[in-house]
Picture 1 (cartoon, rainbow, N blue to C red):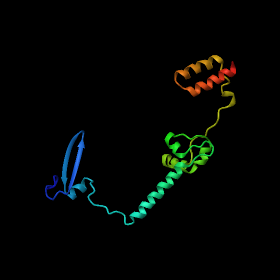
Picture 2: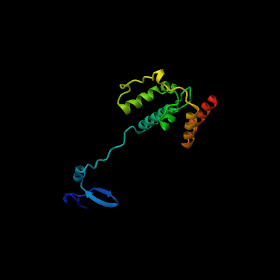
Picture 3: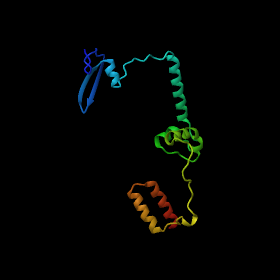
Picture 4: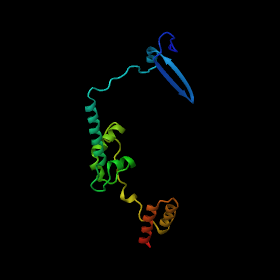
Length: 162
């Protein structure tokens, strides 16, 4: 078969394009295929195939050990953190320091914080205990929004005030 583009050389590459359900097949010679960015050379497998396999198994085992690492305080694992995106307690930052630093380097291109630091609000600006009416209103909204943990906390606060 002759190349569909240059119509001079023998076609050795078959390129299939699928666009919105329309299938177009091109038969290309190696030169025309290379011009379109199609790799025509065959790569040889690594000479030390067993060594490569053992290295990949070792890396996988190390990754599994890191995923199984757990916080001594809340028992959260790194696998749990990856699933939820949240740490379980303040001790998790110390336990998972190395993987967290690597994550920060990949996401933010640095493991060092350069933004503003947190300053807690002044004690005189923090709201005091809420009134009974306010707590009841917040309790009704929490139940309506199915925020049951918040509702239980508000219920307990109401019991203390009443």
